[in-house]
Image 1: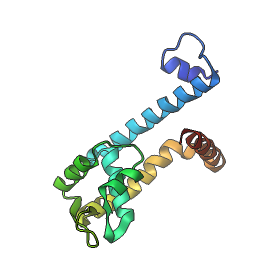
Image 2: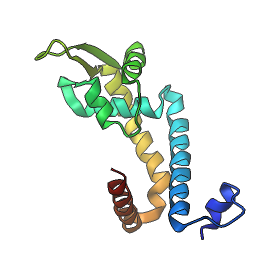
Image 3: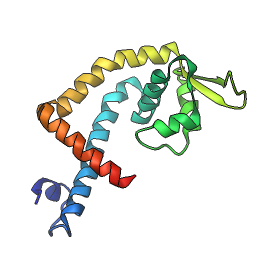
Amino acid sequence: MNASIQAEIKQGKPFESLEQEAFLALLWTADRLQWRLTEALKPQGLSPTQYNALRILRGAGKQGLACSEIAERMITRDPDITRLMDRLGRMGLVHRGRGDEDRRIVVAKITPKGADLLKQLDPVIRQFLHSLLGHMGEKKLNSLLDLLDKAATSAS
């Protein structure tokens, strides 16, 4: 039994199952990692969700993406992607306009200001991730990825 998760959530009695303990440990860990990312992005005035959307748009290139496509690619689901794009637009990080091929579709594109911000953040986030997970080493990180892939597959 993992005493650290039990102590962290002040669980006095044993977990009902190993699956329950693993599930809660995964949620607890994800929450802590998300909080640390939130704190790392705070000086730039970005939330993790905004950062994720900007990275998606950077990867999309000059053609940009429709909001529905951005929503499908998000790491954490955002029920109101339009409002997220509005906030990024007000910050000058994203521009939205009608699609070239289908004028009914609104396409979001990262602005030069948004691309510059990500370029500044790239080494910061790289170091941040290394400080959080680098101590595990390549072999353990690959094992973790394999295990998370198995868990994600069963949740799909």
